[in-house]
Image 1: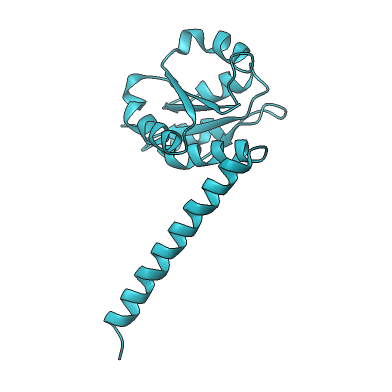
Image 2 (image 1 turned 180 degrees about the vertical axis):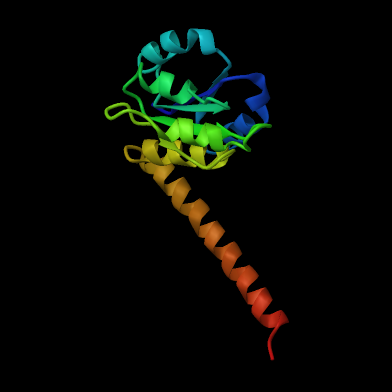
Length: 159
């Protein structure tokens, strides 16, 4: 299976969700985006049968969406706490990571949708050599960019 669901608690989470969707598309992962808090239980309960490998759940404030999804599926759920007007996302972060034993939610940084997508890809790459190779190539490109920037800094400030 190479399909990831991106679930939002509200439409205000869409700008963050789009970052995950963009990365998943770059890796040619089939993606469906939903904003369905009222149907969350039904969606999570049937996600495996619908061909999903992983669920990314984004929410701000109380951020209970990832937990609600995880409580109703055995698929990996990755929570993305979204920043909000009141506490800059700290409330969402704490709500997302404080899951009861037996109902885990992997959690990334506040507004960390890109890392959520990469984590979902890493989970799927355990059983997909093609995805694993794409991840390796992306890491190599990242390393090359860092080394180039380092060389430029050293050259610029050489004594």
